[in-house]
Image (tube, rainbow, N blue to C red; front, side, top):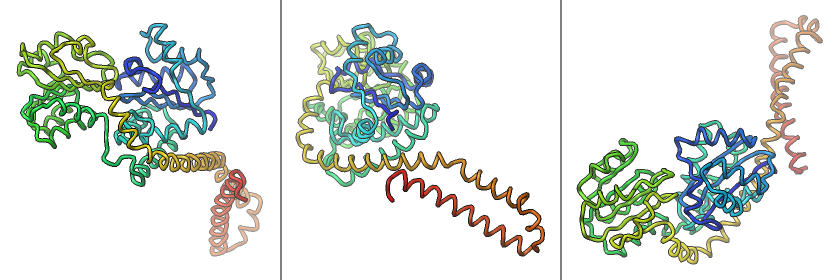
Length: 408
């Protein structure tokens, strides 16, 4: 348990732009994370990236001093300046053992989110684990922990009102957009077809917007979202060939670089003089910074959502205490589950040893006596020994668990 650690770079201590510098595109994670695991000698590793946090969950004996954190940050992004590396290392939260367990449960239950009570995080945690597991980065500890984490988050969303009248980053962005008086016939262009844009698209569809275009690196994913919206789908590379203009541009991709450059922005505007709305929910930002300064742009990003998110926190504070009680119980339960699992693993060789003793007794020590038995007697003896073998293994493991968990 003491070998488990979490390194968290979050909106609580660091600006979104700097957190975004640690984002690794999913197609690059195989190389980057395997190298990170090998370089630092981690036994298990999981990487989580959302719109307001980058977290590393790891098992290993490596001591995470400030110097080690700097090395780790540099390994995540070798293009960072010394000043950026220092700020990220100093702003990182490092949690260990039970404190780290509780933190992971809180993250998946949205208690650590920018928007308390948003449900997207549980899916993001699950998908991050599945991806890292598929890369061979995780092991038995993280498997048990994430299973307990998902169960905890589901219980919190079911038994408390933390997600009542759910509010998410996507819903807050949509509310800001509606406050600007956007009409239902507005031309809406999505860049990216991932989870956040799909969630935001559902709000537009629900409120009878009807003019949609979707650009995405993967055309099949663009077509999937466009089909939901009854709109048009194009590959990301086709943006400079698009001439139908836009009223609202919504950008959220997994890219670590700006997707909407000045050239693309002015092309998409199509020389139209009216004011445009740009929503950029990417981390890091996917819209070139100087575009937000254009007087003909209403720019909405993660930072502009923060104020509404803080108001949301005030409304949900009464539920947080209930959630923390559930998390404390589940964290204690995980401690028990983990120790029981250690016993099971430690006793993994016992059944084979018992079987070897039984075979030795039958085939050598008592072979003469057994050969004197008739077929029926041998069959009964086999049943008795098999029964005793099964029960002995179960009793041995249960007794060891009782002693270890001090239940006697």
